[in-house]
Image 1 (cartoon, one colour):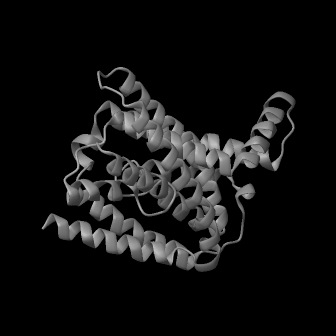
Image 2: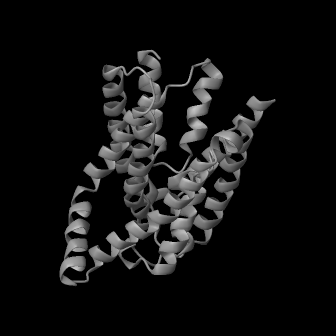
Length: 267
C-alpha cells in the first residue's frame, strides 16, 4: 500500500464511519476501480483508532458527564439523565456484541455477506428505509429521553449493520427516527453508541493482528490514524449542522446513486 492509497482510505473511513452512507460500500470502490490490494488488518485497526479518537474528542464533555453520572448511579444510587443515557449506550451495545460473536464464530460475513451484490442491495434497501423514517419522523424527543424499548430497537438495528452495506450510523439513526427522536438526537445517540461498537470491532481486529505474522509499517499506521481522525472529527461537526437544515434526504439520494454504481460495476 502506498501513501496515496493510505490517505484516501483513511479519509473514506473517517467520513463513512459516521455518515449514513455505508463504509463498506465505499471501501470496495477503490479496490474495484483502481485495482488496489487489501489494505491489511493493521491499517484497519489504525483508522478505527482515529475514528474512536474523533468521537471521544467531539463528545468529550458528554462522555465525561455520562461516566460521572454512571458511577454515581452504580455506587451511590443517584439517578440522572446522563446516567440513564450512559446505561442506554451500554445496553444498546449488547445486541451487536452478541451477534458479532456469533457471526465471527462461523465466519458468516466473510463467507456469505462480503460481496458486491450484497453491499449494493443493502445500500439501496436501507436508503429507502431511511427515506421512509425521515419522512414520517415526529422529532418529539432528544437522546436523554431514551426508553427501554428504544434501546432494544436501536441496539438490534445496530446488530443488523454487521451486514456489509447497511451502515451502522445509518441504521441506528433510522431506528432513532422511528422511535420518535429528533434528527439531531438520533444522530447524537448514534455517535455515542459508536464508541463501544468501535472499541469492540477494533479490539477484535487488534487481537487478530496480535496473533498474525503480518509486518507492521508504523509510519503508515500513524498517518492512517491521524487522517482518519481529522476526517471523522470534521465529518461529525458539519454533519450535525447540515442535518438540522436539510435532514437525511441528500444522503438517501447519494446511497441510491452509490447502489446503482455498484450494480453497474457487477455487470
